[in-house]
Length: 98
Image 1 (cartoon, rainbow, N blue to C red):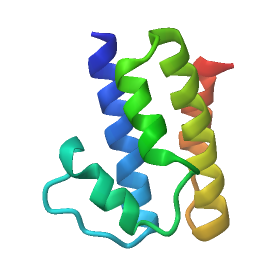
Image 2 (image 1 turned 180 degrees about the vertical axis):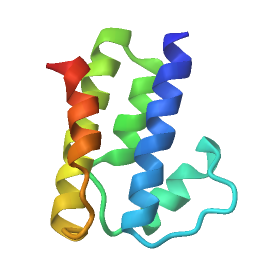
Image 3 (image 1 turned 45 degrees about the vertical axis):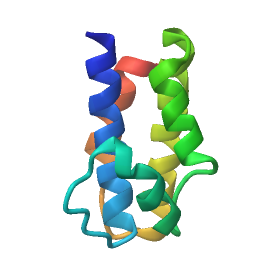
């Protein structure tokens, strides 16, 4: 069940990053992610490696890493898409985290 949650969070992170990078991804399966991540200009550092590690690493560390990635992606939304209001999303995300 935790693996399903991790995968869902990853899909959401990639969805936001595809939007920020103005990318249409016809088939966003994880096996194609190295190519898609390489094409991104807006992304957290070492995105692919970090995402892959969350799937195979220690579950507690995986959740912590996803929390960091979410924070970094939200910061990138503020930087590269300042007209997009994500206040409500941030409240609902960090309500459970903090």
